[in-house]
Length: 487
Image 1 (cartoon, one colour):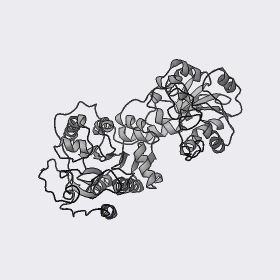
Image 2 (spheres, rainbow, N blue to C red):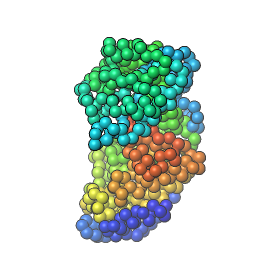
Image 3 (spheres, helix red, strand yellow):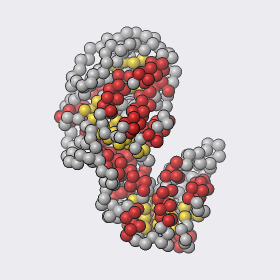
């Protein structure tokens, strides 16, 4: 942690002095705290004192929550044995010469220069295992995906346009010529699908060119079902949406199964929180507490330790009666935050808030910065990252856990002075993986952060879904999974 502390002081030192700490983070989290505040001054706003102790707080009556699972160990097999997977489908039926519709996620970034050049083929490469498995078993593969948000309009190019830009890259990755059609349903599309043979690959047009896609339109689902004998769901990022191409189509094919990507997501995300090797730690960050409170509520029933970071911590601080300066807060969730702290305490779960934060006098990379205790923020300062004492505390907690889930950045990681918290947690995840822990990163921002730190290959699993990851962690049933055939 000396490196993280040195980097933090160096970043802060560019514009203002960082006061020396007056105390170190405690190993055992106290259940009470004082709110006596002492401040010094600096220009432009008053500069708070440096950081102090971490806290495990609680207030108000508990919320009604579902019973905790009784399982205590993480299974290597997929946690949803009731749903058919790809290998199970191949064992049950002869796929040779059959058409298999595969829902994938082809939302790749395009060059801003021409709107047609794929600049990152990660998602294209991710669908290769499932597609190749089907081709190797003699099936004809029909790929379908949405692309951006065209909202029912046909858009020729760009991030909401046709899927033409992925045809060339996909053909190279799969080693076969991909046949592209200009719609996803209809007689013309059915005619092409009926002629597929010898392990061909066909790509349908952007499913969201049809307004009914996002409304799970039965006619669109039926049209998609006419193209194939079987359906494979391999787009985890849309599995939480009950759309025609993710849920509705299941009712119009003989059998439907989870592809390799979806199967792996269920194995790690659902398996890790429902049946982990303990202790289980969740690191939850991000800007908005409104999107994370349901996750925290569910994880309290499953986790041994929950570490909080990001902009949402200030709603918890306000619930504790702290001054948060100009930090972001969602006032309508203050009471719920208080209740969750009380629930965690009653259930013996360590719900840990950062004991110190990195402050800025404006939301900018060249802002004046300082480090303060969580209960000594004042004036026009705003919190944009967790502090060095927090990172030492988090390191101790993470080092004691055998399953760790990381969802949401610790600060404004896009700005270098406020990226140290997120980058350090990413490094701690990599270190935990090296010692044998199961480590999972989910959510768009946390995935981006760990990849920016060059540590994407150093964790057990990186989730491909943002909203789907959150809903699975909440314990929700994903429509795109629930609709699959029984194993």
